[in-house]
Length: 111
Image (cartoon, rainbow, N blue to C red; front, side, top):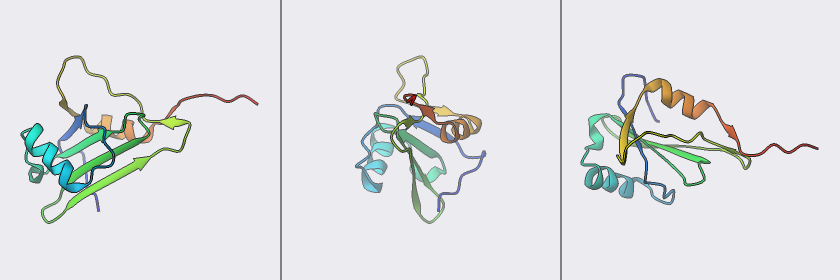
């Protein structure tokens, strides 16, 4: 079970959008590309290119967890924007909640 609170550090990974990856590949990206250790208690967030899927990866003393939230067609997550060329940056708990709980409507179909 993914156990997260406002006490965790949250990192958004901007350029990692491959949703086919599971635990081993995600661990590899975190360790090799980001130079971070997943067992430190941080939560790593990444999003699909079409912004319909968000995944959160964490470690909780004994096990790795991978949480996924996926919208149905017509909805997507808001785009996370930060000035600069960093591939990973820390985001606040309130922004994580805002990201996960506020869908963006891609189109409005009037009948």
